[in-house]
Image (cartoon, rainbow, N blue to C red; front, side, top):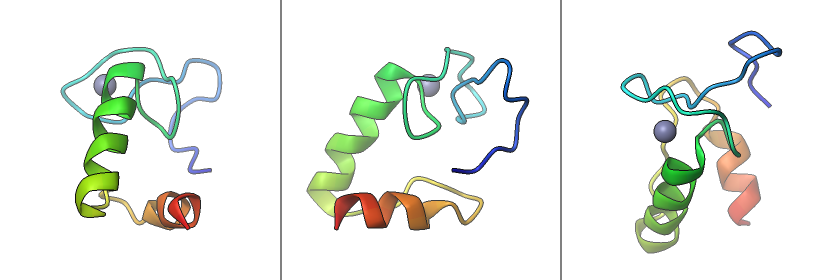
Length: 59
Ligand SMILES: [Zn+2]
């Protein structure tokens, strides 16, 4: 649970995206997009070391 932003209004962590937070620090669209990528190539999406959450999620 990386809370880098205000807990009041959470947004997608992708810098070029301002959608409302949905899950895993991402908006709905990017969450599903990344989830698909993760399942396909087990590639981490986070740039700030919060990838641990993603990995434990997959395992
Ligand atoms: Zn997004």
